[in-house]
Every structure is written in structure tokens, then in C-alpha cells.
Image (cartoon, rainbow, N blue to C red):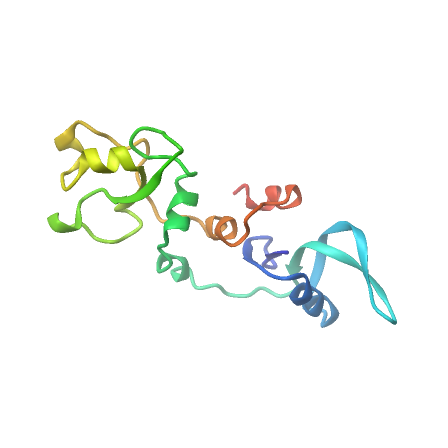
Length: 162
């Protein structure tokens, strides 16, 4: 289930069970529901697909800065090599190599196919005639929704578009 903050900002993915608990405690409301319902001995409720928290929850803006993982880098870069545009055999690359003082930060790590990564090696992209398709940046929180969920249901798309 996609969890939205009170401002409709996507903040998390949770299980159906957790979503139902939030709904039963009146801490969330159903925004998008499934075609079928959930039944218990005493009641029936719509199976949520997207829920929205009733009260705003402050999310520290720097929390996602710490989560640099391969999957997050690939998701941010749309599973595309940032040097040639290939979508296969992806690795991660430090634009400015660590041996040359490059940091392990969102602004210095990109998705790269293995051939481009080998070609660039321990050099700067300009030294081997390569350039980036787009500058690396800290991703939006929505990137982590893509990482957390293997498939994105169509009902989520409008909330993740920003």
C-alpha cells in the first residue's frame, strides 16, 4: 500500500495489514481502493491501495540522503547508463573516482554499464571523452517508493508523478 502524508506527498509503502490498522485507528483514510474487500467476522472494509494519513507527519528532509544503495541509484537514473544510455549490465560509478578525492554522495555516483565503467576506469569522464546524460542529484522521496515496491500499481502513478 502506498502511504501519503496529509499533504498527499508519498512517504512510504506498507503492508495491507499495517494499512488496515491505520484505518481502524482513524489515523488514515482510503484514497484508492481495490475492486475487492477485506472481510472479518464482524465487518467488511475496502481493501486499500493508497491511503492518506489524517494528520501531517514531519519527515526529516535529509533522511533519504543517507540511503545510497545500488537499487536507489539505478531507480534514480531510470535503470539507464548515464554515459551511453544502455539499460543492461548496470553497475555504479563514481564520476570523480574516490582515488582522485571523489565523495560517495548522490552528486558523484551514477548508474553505468560495465563497458562504460571499464572504459572510464580511474579517470575523469572528460579525460576519456565521455560525458553524462544528466547531472547526478539527490533523488526525490518517490525514488525510494520505487525501490521499496517491485511493481508500481497504476493507482499509485498520479501520486508519484511529482
